[in-house]
Length: 265
Image 1 (cartoon, rainbow, N blue to C red):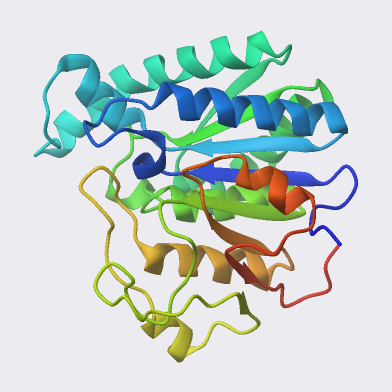
Image 2 (cartoon, helix red, strand yellow):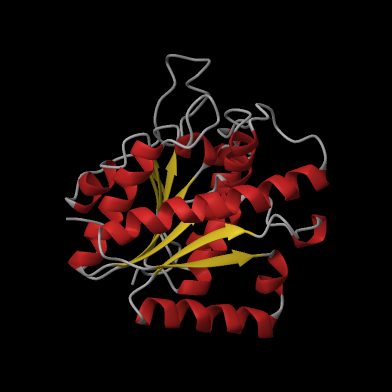
């Protein structure tokens, strides 16, 4: 049985490491395949929200810097440049498959402020009602430390809450949660299901995967805590081949499934 219910509302998060080549430039083939599959999900009847990293990486590549920004101001400027390029690519690909996108740039105060959160909920609801695919990123060009989510893993969890999602799928550059770092230990074992996020599970988390992303497994576990406490399951899978989404839809058990603490919808 598939964990994607009929006409489920799905939040899909893709990180910078999965979205870009080792050179730091956008992996257009992978982006196009992801968009085609998400468009197919919409054609089936699912509602899809995409939380996409990659703005800073796209800005770095656009200017040919070949390095991560060293200051907050530089990062914000690169994010402003890269966000425009990122959306242009998504808009072009989704249009090819007959779907319209809408951009949502968020800061943490939207979640913390009841009025602003309600406005965000209303905007997501209307975008989905109009048949659009909301594409969400953190508003890096204006974010300050007190306004930051701390990465798009955390952002995707709050987006799932705001949207009332049925599931959060985190497309990572690793197969799921292991009992130790598989990059360092070939005997690492994949944890296929987590029913409770306790100290043992947290201890499995390592650091960031590469210099193209800002998150690591610990941020994904924290995201899982946020959504599962709200009754929303989360799945971590390797997104290097986006067709993994079809395998999930077909009922195949892949990656690490974080079970909700409340009854699933």
